[in-house]
Structure formats: C-alpha cells, structure tokens
Amino acid sequence: MVLPTMALTVSDPTAVAVSDKPQRTHAPARTGAEAIFQLLVACGVDHVFLNPGTDTAPLQEALVALSADGERVPTLVPCLYENVALAAAHGSFLVTRRPQLVVVHVDVGTQNLGGNVHNAMRGQAGVVILAGRAPYTVDGAVPGSRDRAIQWQQDVTDQIGIVRPYVKWAHELTRVDTLYQLLPRAVQLAASEPAGPVYMTAAREVLMERPDGGSVDLSMARRTRPLVSPAGDAQALDQLAEWLAGAQAPLAITGNLGRHPEAVQPLVELADTLGMRVADARGPLNVPFDHPLVVENVSEAVREADVVLLLDVDVPWIPRQVTPSAGGRIAQIDIDPLKETMALWGFPVDLPIQADTSKALPALLAAVERRASATARLEWTQRREKYAAERAARQQARAASLGGLRTRRPIAAEWVGAALAERLPRESIVLDEMVTSSDAVRRFLGRTRPGSLLSAGAPGLGWALGGAVGVRLAAPDQTVVALVGDGSFVFGSPVAALWAAQQAHAPFLAIILNNYGYNASKMPVLGLFPDGASQRADAFPGVRFATPPDYAALARSCHAFGERVEDPSDLVAAIDRGLAAVAAGQAAVLDVALAPI
Image (cartoon, rainbow, N blue to C red; front, side, top):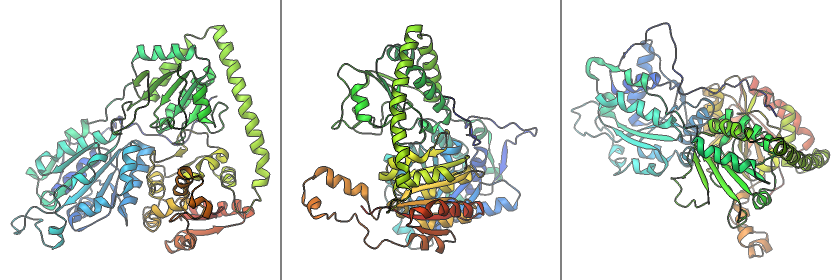
C-alpha cells in the first residue's frame, strides 16, 4: 500500500536557510526584550502567543519598537487565556516541528497554562514559554522596579517549581549579556527529540536593561540546531528483523509514531510485507484508518502475538486486562524508550532500541527484505490475505449498518464520522479530542494521509480548540477541523480560543460530540462498581449536564458561526455550512446532539 502524498509540507527544523544576502552577525537591540525577539527570529520562531500582564510591558513595547524600525519580529497572536496560547503553540509545532513562543505573566499566568503543560510534555511538543517574574528592585533606581502592590504578592519562592516536573529545561534569565547563549539553547532543547516544553522567567529589570553596544550577537542563534535523532543500532535492528521474519503472529503497537508523517509509509510497507497486524493507540494518524491489517481487538491480538513491536507508544496495553504470551518476544523502537518522566512504567521489553522511528523503520524493512525467501514470502502473503479478509468482512458489515445510522436519533457518533468523511476537503487536518467518542468516529472518518489527523498525544483535556488555531497558522491553506467532546469544548476555553482564531485570521471548524456530560468520568464508576449503588440508581454525581450551555449561541457571541444539530438528516448540510463559514474566514461551531450518557 502506497500512501498518497499530502500538500502539507512538514518543515525540517534542522534546515539552514539559504540567502543571497550575507547574514548579519549582530542585530540592534535597545533592551533585553528587543534582544530576546531578535534572537528568537534568528532561531526560526514565527509567532508569539501572548497573554499580557504588568511584567510583560517591555516585551509588548519591543514588538512595536522593532516593527517601527523595520526589524522582523514574530507575528503576535493575542490570547485571552493562557491555556489557549500554549495549545496553539503545541498545534503549530505538530505541523512545523519548530518551537514557537508563549508569553505569560508571572506565577499566576504560569498556573493558567494548566493541563496543556502536561499535554506539551506527554505529547512531545517543542514550545518555548517565557514568563515574567516579580521585579527584583523596589526603590526605582533601575528601570522596571516595582510600582504595584501585586508585585509583592506575586513574588513566590519557587516560580519555576510550578512547572518543573513538566519541562525539559528551565532557567531564570538574569543577565542581558548571556541572552545570546540562552535563547538559542532554549529553542534547541525544545525542538530536540524527545521534544518538549522549556520554561524561562525574566524580571522587568532584565527586559529593560540595555545590551552593551546596543546590539545582540546572532552568531550562536544562527548555528544552534536541534539534535540529529538516531536511526537505531544496526545490529539491534538486524536482530529484530530476524525475530519478525520468523514470527507466526507479529504485532506492532503504535502510539505517537505519526508525529513524523514520514514514518507512516515505512510502517505500512513493513506491515504489508510481513502480514503484521497493527494496533493503533489512538494518537495521530499512525497508519491509514482503512488499512486491512489494522487491529480492532487489541487485547486478543496481544494474547496471540509471538513478537510484539512497540513503536513510540507510552501504554501498549493495560496489564490488568491482558498480558502478552509467556513465550513471546517484545521489542521497542522509541525516541524515549525508558519513559524517564513516568515514575512507574514497567512493561517488559526484550529488545529496547532508542531511535527515531521515521529513520529506523526503513532500515528494519530492508533487514526484513534480506530474509524474504520464497517460502517466507508465501507465508507472509497468506497471513496478510487472511487478516485482510477478516477485516474486509467487518468493514462490509459496518458499511451495511451505516444506512441505519444516517437516520438514527439521537445522532450516532459513527454517523458524525461518516458525514464528515463525505464532506471534508481532501487536503484537510483533523484534531481529535473526542475522548470516549473517538473510536466510533474514527471507524468511519476515513483518514489516510500522514499528518491529516493530529492529537495532543496526552490525556489533558482542553487542547484541540487552541491547537486548531496553531495548526491553521502553521498550515494556512488547509481546512482545519477540531473534533471535541462537550467537556473538551468547555475545557478548551472556547471564548478565548474562538476570539484568538478571529484575531489571528486562523478560522477552524469545531464539531462538538455532545453527550451531555463527562462520559470518561462515568465509566470508571461503572468499571469499579458494576453492581454498585450508582448503577442501580442510574445516578453518577458530577458527570451529567442537566442544563448544558447553548454552545452555538456562545460561538455566535464570539463572532463565529454557530449551529445546533439534532436531526441526523441535517448533519451533512450543517457540516457544509460550517465549512463554508471557515472558507469565508469565520470560525464555526456545530453542536451535535448525541445520546445523553
């Protein structure tokens, strides 16, 4: 199976720009804030997602002053709420692989980044966060000294400690003369695999201090690049190829492999060659949704497999639900095989290989091909055809059921996926934050192109709306659709996200799969207490929304198109209206009524 290419081009963060003009070694900077922006531009930062406060004034002034001088500065994206700013930077990184800047104010602004700090860490999103901190001085002897009472209240003992467990690197900027080293280092660390957020603080005195000579040295920024990721140890890959070639029931389990779209085709070719089934752990598009070797019953496949290959997956299975066969072998290819940020990981791995899967999989495929005798190829082909026939039968039954879904009320999540698949432009990007509706929608969504479906890569809700803003800015020619549960929509600060989309000219379509509550919070109650009082009384405290907000009206109040959809026969036309609004430059929200939980 050869995948079609996508118009979206993922930027190479290690690429060096070529220009006929000689690059300058220094840039004018009257203040530390101006030096920061000059350095970030030299490092390839295009956008600053800003939520301002009293401590960010020097940065705001620097943007205006540098622009007035004809200097290039990152494009400003004003954000009403900090978590939207971070989600947008996260979304942009998923498309470009280049970190963007998020600016927040002191400790409270840092705290308002919320669960999206967790998402950036777990989802390996390279983001540079710059927060103010309370000024050092109180007497006005130097510019930037304290001039408001809140600057005493915001002077906490360990501001960096708020995010310390979630960032790759953190530093307090205290000297203007070291900015030329520290800013490039921050961008490099954020972008280097495994990518992730970095965090810096700077007091106003530093942001307002004049650099020596009124300029900043750009030489370090021009020469600092993300690390080249490893392709994997050749001997270990050869050993893995031997295991796979001799396996009777090989299985690949993948989680975040599709963050590098170029890794998808080698996985498809490896699976097709071996007749190897693939279990997708519902991250980005790791394998085309319609691929004949995609597994639906993961637990059954894990039990049957004699060789399991873990590919960029955090949690391959739930041990209390299933364990691999005692005699099976488990191998792993992962840029972060030790999962060092997880206190308890503990999955058995016989052959852990640290590597970039987009580089290791082609080498692994070549090693398997070297073992492809005529007998082996016949066996692999027969296995592939067997699994493909089983999946084709399931898909045929599913397609037959679609007729009933088109008219079923309340609207079925499956019909949302099928209707969207009918109407989405070929070149489009979907963000998945549907939680408990995700599996049902994905079965009919029909995504096949690498990079055409993205996820936070983490369970913290409130990512997709802001993420859609960042994705649209990074891919301005693509249609962007955020699929969210009603809880995810609320967590995503929709007022702030829709306003940011309007301000940044980055419209997207949000489709709410509205089941009137937190189904993800209801399910554990049923799981732990299947015959409990909650089940008998059909009472689940805190999870049902008896009188939910009018999400369509909320959208309209934020200058977006908003529509409530209750009749399944109206869904396709409503999607068309939403997409038309986006094409005309307006964000859109469809509130689709599913069965209440």
